[in-house]
Structures are given as C-alpha cells and as structure tokens.
Image 1: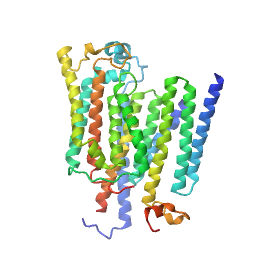
Image 2: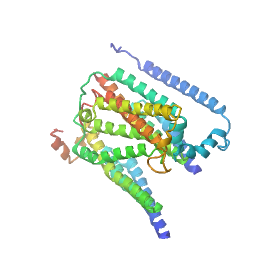
Image 3: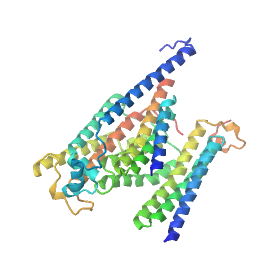
Image 4: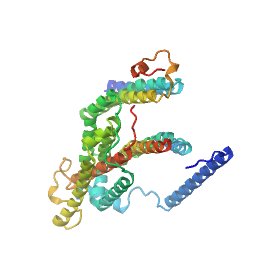
Length: 113
Length: 80
Length: 252
C-alpha cells in the first residue's frame, strides 16, 4: 500500500522536476530551435511521468486506463506540435539558417542560403 | 488550497494586463489563451467541472483559432 | 488611401498615449460598474436558498439526470437553452452573410507529412471523445455545447492541417447546414412532443425514462444534448470555414 504511494509520489516529483528543467531551458537557451528542443523533449517526459504517477495514485482499473490514454495522447501530440512549429518557423526564416554550421534542411528544400 | 488559489488569481490578473498592454496582436492572443487556461484551473479548484470544460474548449481552443484566422485576414488586407 | 509622409513621431506617440488613456478609462469604468453590481448582490448564505435547495434535493427525482447542471439546462430551463441556440444561429447567419465571398475555397497544401499522418491516427479518438461528452451529458460533466465545440475543432484541424479543400470535400457547407438545421429541428421536435404527450412545451418525456445511471435514461435530455451538440458544432465549423476562405495560402 505505502510502496504504491511512494512510487506514485516519486514519479510525480520527477515529472515536476522535469517541468522545472523545461522552464530553465526556455529561459536560458539562445534561439528558437534550442528552446523548442527543451520544450519538446523534457515537457513530453514530464507530462508522461505525471500521468503515470497519477494512474498509480488512483489505482482503479478504468480510471487508471483513462489517465494512461491521456498520457499516450501527450506522447503523440506534443512532438507533432513541436515539429509543426519548428518547420513553420524555419520556412518563415525566424532564425536565419546562415548562422548555423550544418544545415541539411535547406539542401532538401532546394534553397540557396 | 488557499495558497494555490491566490497564486492563480495573481497570474490571472497578470495575464489579463499583459494581453491589454502589448501592441502586437499575436502576443495578446497567446496571453488570452493563457488567461483561459488559468481560469479553467480556478474553476476546477471551485469544483465547477462543467464550466471548466466549456472554458477550456472554447476559450483556449476555439477562440485562439478564430482570432488567428482573423489576424491572418487583416494582415493579408494590409499587405495588398 | 493616401498616407501622409510627414507624420511627426510626437504626433504618433501622442496618439498612442491618447489611445492607452481611453482604454484605461473604459476599463476603469467597466471595473467600477462590475464592482457596483456585485456589491448589490446579497452575501454568501451557504447555498441554503430556496430554489437551489429545491433543485439539489429533488432534481434527480424529477428529471433522472445525475448531472444537475444538465438537468437545469435542458429540463428546468430548456426554454432558455432554446434561446441560446437561436442566438448562435443568428451569429452564424450574420457572419456567413458578411464574410463569405465565393463558393470555392482557396486551398493550401497543408502541413507536412508527419503532422498529417499523426492527426490521421488521432482524429477518430477526438471525434469519439466529442461524442462521449455529448451523449453522456446527463451522467458526467459536459453536455451538448462542450461536445459540439470539440466536434467543431475537428473541422478546424482539417482546414489547417489538410488544407481547406479537404474540409470542403469531406464535410461540405451543405452537410454542415443540414447538421445544424437537423439539430435545431430535433430540439424543437422534442419540445412539440412535450406539448403533445405531457402537456407543456419542452416537458421531459415520461415514457423515455429508465433506471438512473444508465446511458438511455433521463427522459429527453440525452436527445436534446445530441441535437444541441450537432447544432453548435456545425455552426462554429461554418463560422471558421467562412473566415478561413482566401487565407492560409502559403504552406508550412
């Protein structure tokens, strides 16, 4: 009984720590794409960990199944939204590609930078 | 409970002020979306699940899309 | 439109200052009015007032709906909900009359392949969630309005992600108009059936009640929920569709 609660609190606390790391990355990283990297990777991990912790905390079959479905939804939607935002900001040239050393995507687009 | 509510109300007023303050429309819309999300959390704290669902769906989801399309039309008209 | 070239920066800053002062004055006036109207309200009396007490005590027995908010919206105050959906119908009519310019939409190519494929997987689950919210309005939080807006979000996703021609082919404006009118006619038909069977407009139909807590129970409330849901969803989708015409031409 208590081991289950301890595991749930551990998962939720790890997820909250990942969210704090996300905010740090958003504040400290230099430009659009690295900030988006922080928001994508760490925030997906944080949301999935918090949903897993909540599913262990309530410990009822149908309720836990619904919460785990919400976690799977996060796992699909968050990287997809980040991909869409990154692609749109690249095509709008929000951060200029000539500032980077390796830029493979402009070759794919056929754009001479 | 009390501390969380006070923090949420402070952020609510802050996001409303920011939405009025900025001249750029896009930032105002993003702050309105944040306003709706904080309001959803406040409704859930006061155990009004129906109103929270309506606020999350309409305020954070539908209003943002409709405002974005309106901005897009205005900018198209300006550039022409 | 001739723009004068010699606009001094002082004039612009003065204009901005005047605009901000005007906005601040209007906001302060609205805040004062809200404060005065809230100060007129009676104090918090612990929810022991007559009407709310009555609804909390005998709402389940009267309507058979576990969700008391849905019971108030679609049974006790169903006539007000009919007025609300009429207001939405008026808004949709006005926006379509002003904004829609031509029948064929200018389409975009949509977003990238990854987004299209992922949303192709996720969209049926969003539709299922919207239908769940609509049909379980008398059991769980939610109802027709919220579920209808979730269904309208699917149309917005189609317009943005797949291009507006896809939305036009799958759910044409004629289909949306038929759905909206069908929802409104369901609402009105249930009201007229209330006159015929129970003796009052929008009275809860007695022969449809079943055991409390099951899906098909609570009289005519689930059917009104479904009608209002399709009406609101189709109406908001029409609003977004008529606003998105001739925009979003570039692909991202």
